[in-house]
Length: 353
Image 1 (tube, one colour):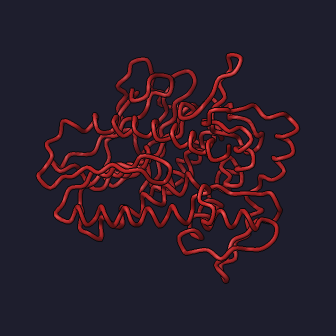
Image 2: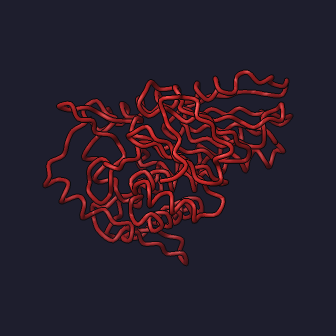
């Protein structure tokens, strides 16, 4: 049964990711591709990955990127029984698990962003997420007692980081971490490194909607990345960002959800309540130099709320954000305003709170 649930979750994620990938392609399809441009799609990290690469070393670069992604998935996926993350969870409350440089870096970053977001992002939320089963064929509303009991297991400060022995542990049994979201950001950054090492100067890296725009398009214009309309059909956008050498990561309540008795329950769970976030924000997009930063921030600021989120993002160098609220109001931080254009008249741009 668990295996079937996991397969169904993967299927939903794949369908969502494929629609995002197609939408990204449509936005940039009018450009003239050079003879050295190749587009490759494949499955990995629980999603559809789409690499669009321009350059003489493109085939070699893509193969090296695929190999690198496979290594990262085998180390960090909670769906692989003997991954480093799975072994940390199995040994929770018992002993630390020696891990690779990759896994140590990502979990350390996850803790860093947990602190920065004051716990609205928390990689130890897995016990709560497992209760809801959102994205499977049989999502459920957990009982209040289940939520209360499992909330005691959610605390990023219970992650034990031992730099000297390069090992990681959890203080209590039954605790579990899941770094699937932030690991995708790390993976995108690693693909970028592979491409740069192969002298690729133009590429669009899309890991299930986690996008990194390397350089410019082959025609030297900026890449255009659409911001999904969070209240409409998948593939519809409220606006477009023009970027180069930037990561664009979005968290939205439209990604995975279920409806019961007329109420929508989405997958972005507030670590402090154990229930889907009820923030006024329904979509948060982070634009940054490094994709792992976008992943680490996008969920946390979604839950944190508009005012605190804008203040936090404005305080971080090289990071910007676009927020969409339930009232269809759009807010952009100062560094991205000139590169963002609203294309849907149903949404209103607000210059300030």
